[in-house]
Image (tube, rainbow, N blue to C red; front, side, top):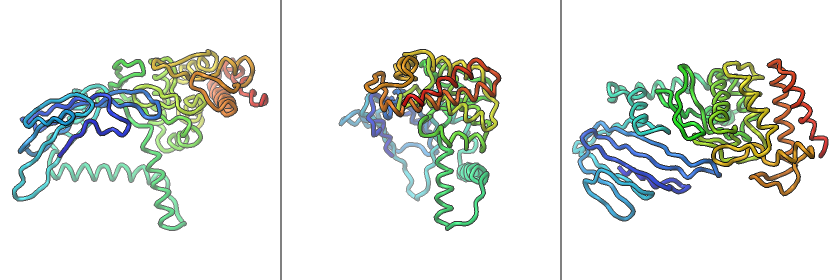
Length: 355
């Protein structure tokens, strides 16, 4: 079995891997390059096997080191083999973390304990996963159509439930947008991988219907991103914002989640973050991404002109997106009883007339 630490399609800037032969364990980390401009960060992992290694080693570029136990660099990896003279199955249990190898090991112990590391435990985990997904998919029951059309529907629903995804660990630690380790209060979960412009129109509203508790955690996660990183993301992964797409997409995501009945997040803090981003030109996160490129012109002229910098593009689209964002903020502020923020945001939302 090969564990290729340099296999990222976007390139691997750096990585490290460690073999613990006595523990039948491989652990390590890889620095991800980021996708579509999203922030780079580190993913840690730990994997434990139920059979001893017959042979093992590591590589670094073209150099192989038989019986080697560690390697580092962008083109590194490890290999192990197993002696199964009568055939059989090798079981592996694995976990990841965005915080540390130690947290990945703790996640593994919490979510896939050694006591259930056998064939029966594997079957039980598979059964549990099947039941969990089936429970989610059964929240929407459909009839009619062809079998292929029903399969398409439930496949799409399955895809909708895959992101935003959990970025906090079993001990509730996560990497904030300030690059520091934070701990959540009991009962909360941190989410990342918000493809904001792609999901604010309908997916987040669907998630609010299907799982309001998770949807509330998603809204609160965006607020945490603002408080820790200085701005809410337009396309956030687990580490920061990539600034992809136009518009201030976290605003309609949060407002949409609220509009569909979710209340388990800090609404005043959300409105504070929204208004600051809507009235503070050049507001950007720690990694340099502007939350609202072209905002100074939008506030002064009532539209975003062509040729705007700061990572902005599509001036007509940007203007309309900001109007939609401000309208969403106005509706949330009205629902929360904050007439001042509601009035100011609704005034800005009329800038579409200037086009």
